[in-house]
Amino acid sequence: MTRLSARCTQLILPVFLVGVLPLNGAQFYNDWAATRFTDIPAQSGATNDPDGDGNANLVEFAFGTDPRVPDAITGIVNPKSGSTSGTNGIFSVEVLERAGRQPGVQIDLLLSSRLNGANWFRPWWLRAITNSLPSDPIGSVRESFTTRLPGTNAWFVRATVQLIEAGAEAAKYYVATNGSDGNAGTDTNHPFATLGKAADLANPGDLIYLRGGIYKSSSTISLSRNGAPGRSIRVRPYPGEPVMFDFTGEGTGTDGISISGDCWWLYGLETTNAGHNGIRLSGASNAVERCVVHNSGNTGIHITGDTNTSYNLVLNCDSYHNYDAPKHGQDADGFSAKWIFGPGNVFSGCRSWENADDGWDLWMGTNTVVITNCWAFRMGTNIFGDTDWQGNGNGFKLGGGYVGTPHTLVRCLAFGNMANGVDQNNNIAGQTVDNNTAWANRGANFDLDHDSTNAPMKSVHIVRNNLSIAGRSADSFRSGSLRTNNSWQVVSPVATNSDLLSVDYSLATGPRRDDGGLPELPFLRPVPTGRLVNQGVKNGNAYVGSAPDIGAYESPEW
Ligand SMILES: [Ca+2]
Ligand SMILES: [Ca+2]
Ligand SMILES: [Ca+2]
Ligand SMILES: [Ca+2]
Image 1 (tube, rainbow, N blue to C red):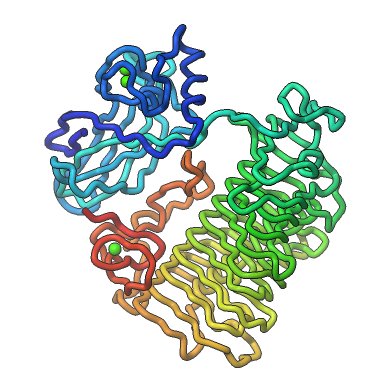
Image 2 (spheres, protein in one colour):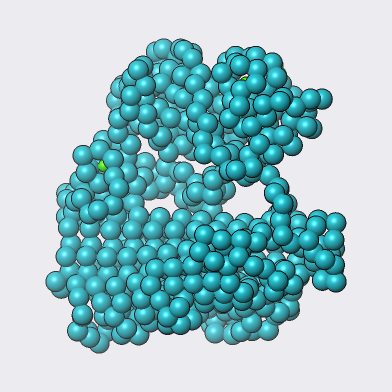
């Protein structure tokens, strides 16, 4: 633990917790050790401690100490600044990673105000790599962690280390840009050339590795076979080798990757220049995780099909610069679930920016979609030089076409969109809109009264704990909407930028955490102990402190 305060920056004792480990974490660590040492300790598991110095191999791996030699890990966690009075103190800690920043290892810092270690919590941390000092080992980096908390406490600091990437495992099929579909495809020296070839052979539980590089394809890659529950067919890059699919040359209306089968798990892929959707989902129980989809000719990641199109998860994906030139931007959304699909489809942890039309569009969707912890920003901006621009520019468009389906939008950010932040469109069912933050949209932040014909509603909107600041048009809601504990109801005078830690959105498109999570920024977070904290109504969503905060973020308490 390191004690952090301005008056007393005192190193007490470093304590490292080792996080959840993938099954083959030992191999990842062994690969590292093999390149650095002439021998690998007999106890080479990530949680083993063969030198008995109290630091598990994974910790020594993360911080660059020797797993074979007892060495106290000192000088790793260094308080840089703290404040002792007033509120909103800035606390900064620097972490020395002697062996450089290990890919796939998530280091987090926990704080407690008590020496006995009660009430550890993880605040948000703005992270930046800083220069190493002349006395640091060659190849080391220092990573700064900065947060803002009320300034009257001294904090004890400890680190957790979690292994995210586990290194290569044995795969059923290998694909490489220099491969051949005439190869056996079952080892890395005889890879296939196309993902489609492997996909046509895959069975439940199979892993397909893609070696790094750019895969060019002018036709749709179809994933039509089925995995099984608990035994998805996994498609992912070989560890440490970025993979891009470039669909340049596809015709308008031709998708990039089409998942019509069930139980596929696509992880860590990038697509560009698809003729139509970058990734289209029409099967069931599929996961698309940590994929980046951009410059598609229509919506980036799209769910549609039939009633079997259900329980798909789109997790921690980014979708940007998608644009349909023939219709001057009126169709291409970042993410969408449209027309016919079944229940259980979820978007979580995703970012959508600068797409031609909307961030999310649930146009005429026939079943409830949950969108949680997602960001939609700068939609509808004509960055494409289109002289007959038709893009809408809503952040979250919750349905349309007078189909009545209740959707759920929770803990999302909508900001800087050219039209509305959150928009009902012509959905005639009530929507659940809880704990969202809408800021500086060019239309209304919340327009849940968007229906020019005023068609009768099947149910009422539930609108709780939302934060609205600096929308250009007034927020509006269908009469009868159940509105509870929103910023405009509990804060007077109305909430302004001064209720926020930051309105600097410049890092919103920045890198994600190692675990795939959204970047942690001060942007749009409530001022600690400010007017938005603990002012929400308990609505079933997790919170800290005595009650939910207003908006998408919870201030930590201790
Ligand atoms: Ca050790
Ligand atoms: Ca050691
Ligand atoms: Ca749209
Ligand atoms: Ca709270």
